[in-house]
Length: 342
Ligand code: DAH
Image (cartoon, rainbow, N blue to C red; front, side):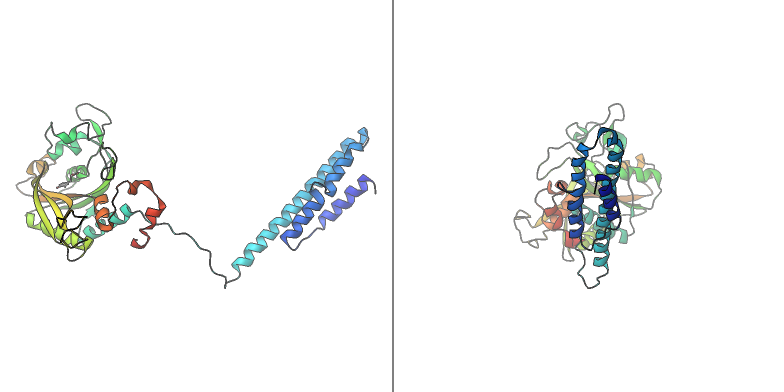
């Protein structure tokens, strides 16, 4: 057979090729297109073809090579298809293992807090993370020289009479809510806050808070106390006790810091509560009349309470997380520990 005849016969052969197994396809590939394959050796012989015939032969050879490659591909694909449909039609085979993602402990905690307050009739309110001085400080009764406005704490975006900044607490959403709605107001405001702090096990420049605000006629400190008690018992268990210590915030009067009985030792004293039996969980108080007034609510007609807590802190107490940085590192070994908490 001369080259021309061999090309013709191989073309014919390729058309009729079939295979049962992946291995047979591979054998065909090696026989035709491998280093010592039949088509490859035709290319070697091509060198001896007289110059005037080179063009015609070259075209034929290339067409043969392409036809062989296409056929082998086709056989391979058919083989793969058969393999997958064979798997899915065997209903007795065990299913494929799918790794499940887990929700982040901060998300889990935030949803739980929201869920508890929703049952008490609170709606969710949100506000911008990039805020102005007025909503973060001034409308909340911060005096102009208050240290929280200091460059040390606040990330400023611009300066001027009412600088733009990253909110340092979610209390700004109180102001935005009071501006746009009339009492009765009952909202919780979950969100991210930013402070210019060095990152350590106990501090971070980004964290999450939930703010609460309740304004109506005749809202009293007793209402605040009872609402917080109910919340902590839902969150940390029915035997949890609370303790309120007098404190100071510019936007509440009176102000308090709330502790819960240590959920590890039950109040006896351990290394988590540093032997005191109590763990601090939030700030709270009666909304200062100046704050109501600034947002157009008459303090002679209405009163209210507010509270604010850090979500990281609540999650740390709930699961004994000892280092804040773990929440931001996205180490799957840490995240996996919350698989069963969803
Ligand atoms: N905004 C305070 C903070 O970031 C927390 C807070 C304290 C919020 C008392 C309140 C409150 O609503 O009444 O530290």
